[in-house]
Image (tube, rainbow, N blue to C red):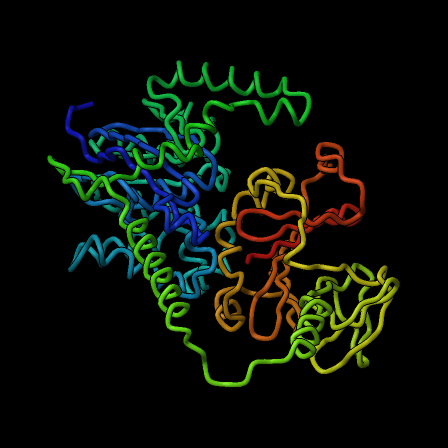
Length: 495
C-alpha cells in the first residue's frame, strides 16, 4: 500500500433543514445524519466502513458528489465509480442502453466497443440485454454491476451493501482483490461485518452518524462484537433508552449545532458573524408592530364598517366555539361499503359530524353514518403518543428497514409520478400494491398520502412499548405511524 490518498473526506457533517419554523428562525439544524466524519482512502487500500443503511446512504451520496455536505469537504485524486443495487431497482431503461450509457462516462472509441463486447459475453448480461433494469432481481443487478466494475479502469470504487445481494461472494472478493493489486482504492460500505472481515485491510465503524472506531480490522471486529454482546444484555425498554446514551447525546444535543455547522475556511470572524441575523430581524419586526399599535391608539383610528353589537359578537363567539375541527377516519381491516363500493383498509374518509356513538363520514360525494367501532378515527391535532421514528423502524420488516428512504420518498407526491416509477400487482383508485414487495400505497385523489407495510416477524412491540389496544397511533418527527397488532402491519403518513 502506498501513501497516496485517493479519497479524502474532512469533517463531513450533514443535516436536513429543520421543518419547524421556530427552529429554522433560531438557526437550528434539523435531523443530523453525519457529524464530523473523516475518511481517508489510500492507493491500493480496501477500506471497510460499517454502519446502518440510512447512514451509508448519506456517506455514499456525499463522497460521490451527489449530495453537498452541510459542513466539511471532499477531495479526490482520480475518478469515482459508485455502485449500489438499490439505485437501479426502479430503472425503466433496458440493460443494453444502461451499460452503454454508463461505460461512455469512462471509455470511448475502440476501447468502449471492446468493453461492451466483453460484457455481452457474460451469461448474466447476455441473457437479459433487452430487459429493463427494474425487471431484474437484486441478485442479478448485483452480479451485473460487479462484472461492469471489473472492466472499468477508475481510481476509486465504492460498493454499497453488495454482500447482501450476492450468493457468489468469492467472485466479489476476486474483483476487489484485483482492484487492490492494481493500486485502486476500494470502499466497502456495509451493514454486515462479514464482508469487511473477509476483504478489507482497514476498518471504520460509524455509529449514530459519528466515527466510533477507526483502525485495524482485527481490533475493530473485537470491539464491535463486544458492543453487540453488551447490547444483547439489554432486558427492557428503560435500559435500551439508556444504552449508548453518550453517543446519542453527541449527535442530538442542540448546544453542539453552532459548533458543528458554522462556516468553514474563514481565517477571521467579524463581529456580525457572531450575531444571529434572524433574531435581529424578528426584533425589528416586533418593535415596528409595537410602534404602529401605539400610533393607532394615540390617533384613535377607526376602520371602515360598523361595529358589531354585543349580541352579534356573542353569536359569532358561540359559532366559533361549537364549530368542529376537520378530522378524518380510516377504513378499518374489515373494509367499508359506501355508495355500492367496498373501500379497502386505510382508505381516507372525512368526518363531517360526530356524536357519542356515531360518526358521519364522507367519501367523495357520498356520506354515511357509521358506529365508532367501524372506522379508525384520526385527528392530526390530537395528542398521540410521541415516539422516535427510528425506534419504531426496528419493529418493521427487514424490507422496510433497508429501503424505507427510497419508498417513503413518494409520500405526499403525485400519484402519476409514483406509477411511472413503481410496478404494481394491484392498482385502483384507492390503493396500489407494489409488485414483489409487501408495500401498499394509499391514495387520496391524485396524492400519495400513506404507505402500508408489514411488521417484523414475531413482533415484540406490544410487550416492549406496553400497547393496550389493537390499533395504536404514534406521532413521529415527520408524521404518524399507525400499528395494527392484529394484522401486524403499519401505515405511515408524512405531514
